[in-house]
Length: 185
Image (tube, helix red, strand yellow):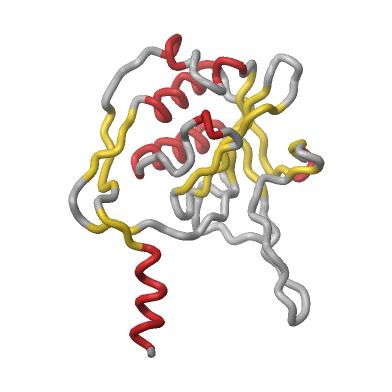
């Protein structure tokens, strides 16, 4: 019975032929990368952090929502912890990180985490000053979730890209969530 319980925990976290590394496969220039969605519609890109509420009350456990704080499909900026606008040179670095690297596959077993507790995101702002797309990032388990499927970035990044994103977030002044040892309130 104990072996069955251990297998139940381990098997969902393993998958075959997974990524062991990634490499920079192209040097596509920024003017071409900026034509890809959502950069082609963005006039600003924000790097943000937000604190997730992991508290529970009484005996009953409530569902914990680790999503970007929203109300009526609108991002609640008042609930964000840190907000930094990326400069053009930083957006150039971001497009390079997201689109000029590819996964390198090996025929072995690699760990895939089941957690998803994002504390950071990139928010894309259009000319009407509206957020129209976002990419949530969990640096703790190296996973992403985007607001639109045509971004093509859901859990599609490799370890090196997460490390480069951590550096970018740190360089723009975002600290919360980038350091995976930070505990939520």
